[in-house]
Length: 255
Image (cartoon, rainbow, N blue to C red; front, side, top):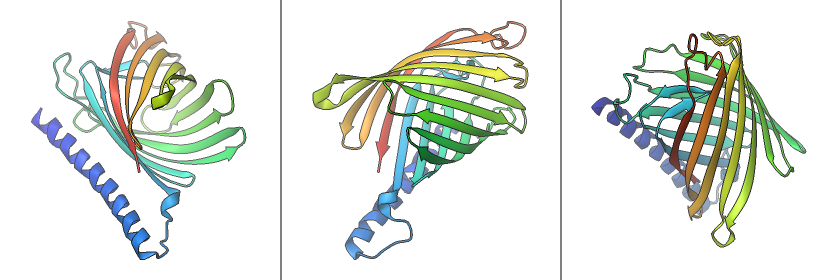
């Protein structure tokens, strides 16, 4: 427990320091009036602090215990770099120490009415005993439709070998116009192909989020999801995963 909290505090300090540096740099630039190499209007700092009742990923329950998942990303024009982590608050429902750190870089190009992104993810599992691995990915986001559509393809070329594809459909519905509060309805279909022990199968997910602005660039987002594995993921002789209901909240900010 102490080890988990120490890592958690360290990560928060790291994220806060980066944000502070970016903010101070912006202030100094405005006061001096001098040009800098990376124009501030082209840089966006985003961060989230998430809490979930359990950690479910691609139809697999990684941890039955509540987890915290802080993340931070930097966007410069069409390039994005992000840090994401997950750690259990305590180990009471299982013996899993599901500490995880993901490092992602990506490049996005807009072709109206769609955006195409390519990128790379490096997964690390300190203290959990799981093997680190790496994936390339490509995504297609279709804009200007009544619903949001995102198609993803991940190729694991390292430890697990294989691919995972997903289709996600979202619908934004305004709840309280006066305060810009809206809900997002979420439908997800994922499929494995020769991914480690999962030769076929995948997961369905239904979910909803409510985005509540609390300041100009800060939001609180409670969420609820229902995940249903199928195929090899649900087979009791292979993945042995069962449907899961989980929820939580996210505190997000942008500078």
